[in-house]
Image 1: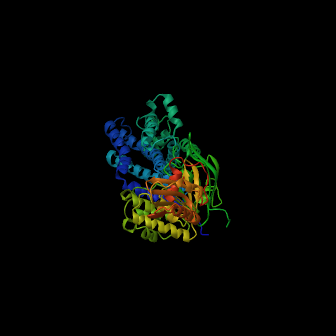
Image 2 (image 1 turned 135 degrees about the vertical axis):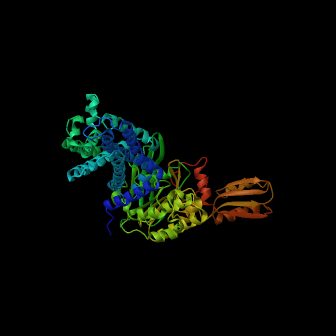
Image 3 (image 1 turned 60 degrees about the vertical axis):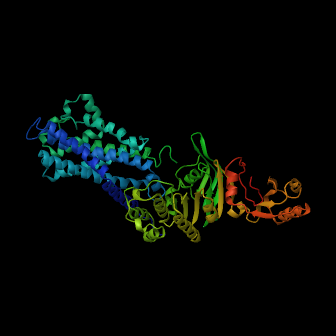
Length: 269
Length: 318
């Protein structure tokens, strides 16, 4: 008997079709990319040159921090909504009736989300570099940090998005439901508010439990000079702690998504 | 290969909250044959299919598909099945060609997608996005997706719904070819001509139960005639004829007599002999063979019997 195509093959071919879908659905594409970009432009223009310090202005800080928002909104929200929609419109069910495994499904989703997140980050960086004179790091070490940070961020957020999708009863309310924790965390985690040190201690403590604070802090470490660590809650970039926190969220997200993932809706079947 | 059927369902129960959609159904779909599940909307056909397809565990009973448990042995079973759902689950922005290639890519030895597109009349819309297809085209693509993996067993949920006559006939031909190739088919339909044309076995469902099973011939009592209409003098004492044959006899309007039942040659001879003995002037005799539709309507509309099986040709439609 001929062997079946591998899980990886099925995942890749699904990821490709998801990307095709996304590229053709202009409304979804434009809004996915434009929302964090518009917020960045607004924050950058409004706060402009505030706390201009050591050659770093607020717009450049937001350019670094907003990468966290871009990844969270793409990976977590797009994933959460995407799965809720797939579940509601029968995509998951149709795949369930084929040799496609759950792993292959998630590989496809992850390829889609990671690609879109990468493009999102590129858009935000372009705005930062060309709009707000943000400097891109010239050393390999910073880009290595960028790489592992991006991968851990996307993995943890997609896994949490999968888990969160099971809280969504109807696809049409998914956006509203999933945006609540995301937007709240942007404020708590020093993404929309800078510096994070002006927040009450309990807020910082609360934010430290979730991944967003660590993602934002990590990207600031990549794009801002080390002198800026004095605006961080811990007074340092804490890269080891960031890796640990995001790694822990990847594990927690995996467990949560395995526990909660359903192929069909509650009323379906 | 085991002698067990392609699908074996034993006492399967499916509940949605307080509603029992499938209430203790047992059936066997033999390998290499076409079994049609016939019933009104809400009869439980799709729910039963969902159990066989592994989309849900039955709330009672057991379903075995190709000798496997559809839920527990899901990954081993799926490559051997072709499933056509009623609706949904196709990427709206992807084209017909992309969708079919995607699903072909999941199979070990897929059919030639070009051939399938030609057979189902989809060649012309190969580059059309799903969302721009007509309902019938979407159905045909869904069928192509179900067949592209060379399944051993195909589940078709109302396969020709929304199709025009030509597409319907193409679909029927495809199902007949599948059968000729030894593929087992379990389909649901509420189209009687579809069941009569395609099915080796028909299971009529009503309110979640099996109301009748049998071949179309058995169900329609093909060997016999189920209605004689005799035109003769008005007011003949036809009730006396009831002593000679087991049939329902009425003078439906003056001079028009209907004799309904499973009428074999002897019964027909007895009817005509009675009219002769009564010295009646018979002006016409019409016979009617029972159709699947009669059986179906009798079983699925008012006062259907709670019978779980009617497998003989002697049962009168009531």
